[in-house]
Image 1 (tube, rainbow, N blue to C red):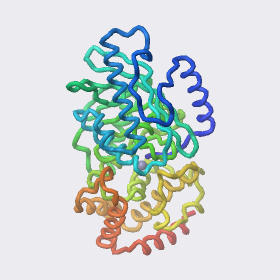
Image 2 (image 1 turned 90 degrees about the vertical axis):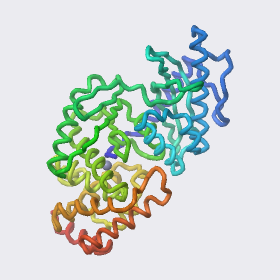
Image 3 (image 1 turned 60 degrees about the vertical axis):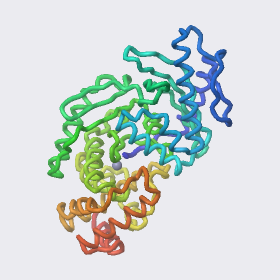
Amino acid sequence: MDMSVRRVIIIGLTIVLLISTISGVTGCSKRDGKGKGITETDSSLPVGLTSEEQAVYMAIEEVIATQEESVREKDSALYLSTIDSSNATYLMEATYFAHRLAYANLSDFNMNLLGISIEGDGSCIAEIQQSYRMHNQLNTVTYRERFIKSGASWLDHDVAFEEKEVGVIKVFYMPEVGNPAGFIELIEKSLVNLEETFHNSLTENVEIKLYSDRELLRQKTDLGIAWLFTGWAEEGHAIKAFTGREPEYNYEALFTHELIHKLTISVSRGNMPIWFAEGLAVHYGTFKVNGSTYMEDGTVSMDDIKISVLELSETHLERLTEQTDILTYYATAGMVVRYLAETYGDDQVFALYQALGNYPFNDIAVDPAWEQHSDERLRAVLQDILNLNITELSEGYLEWINLQS
Ligand SMILES: [Zn+2]
């Protein structure tokens, strides 16, 4: 993940306005807010559909009703029954999404089918309005999702992305992103940054998904994240990015950050605690490519990052809501890794995540004790490789950070 949060109140108001507009125009409130999905009767079908389109419309509506019910009930198996398993990356992302529902503090999840279009290749693109409530905030998005026919039923194949392939990079992008050539160039540069720092390249294809809608990026990734992030990387997922940041935003730093996640999460076999994964990506990616830290550019104060490693490791990044707290988390994680790198050298830092790869694969999308396992394993390799326990690491970091200006 990468930083930065929108002004939620303004968005909330915009969304409320949007919803009233949309439901006013389409008359599309098809289900009551509390009950489970109800299969539509013919009378609610959009006008002007052919009989083939009517059948597809009703079938897709059923898939959407199943998804809605599975999210409300936090039933991951039911949710996964709607996903096109031939799309391997999307299946991994959906497995994570479904698993994380158990940890998400959400209510009033709704999906409404607004319309369909049957494509030349036999797939169907559905326009969907989706919303849910978190921290008393209603988050709504309208998007176009592709469904494919499999036997008698239709399955969810992911957002209706356009595709472009350049070398090892495969980019999936929303049409609203426009020409992705500029982003592809920055991804290529970021791959070079990764190789230069880690002397290790990504051997497989790199899949990147570009979203023009930041709320959609969250709603297709993890409904439990309390803030709107810009980038995403996780084992087996595509790297994801929101493309609509301010003009001065440094996307090379973002892509380098996410590629570091992709490499190190894969080598460590999912065994890095979040703070350590973020520390590597911030120190060797964000801060290195930006050429400055959040403290140097005045975003975070030096005093704020003088916290113990234990406190950092017990903070749940996904639950933070204040932008200052989120940036402070990233900055502290980055500086703890910088402390390790300056004290022991890059090779010793790299040896930590490499040694974590000797443990069995720790699947964040499956293991309920994922956090405990990754914590224990990092502590073990810190002891083995640097002869440090977590208290000594913390004391060393605090002593070092107090000497930094
Ligand atoms: Zn990150």
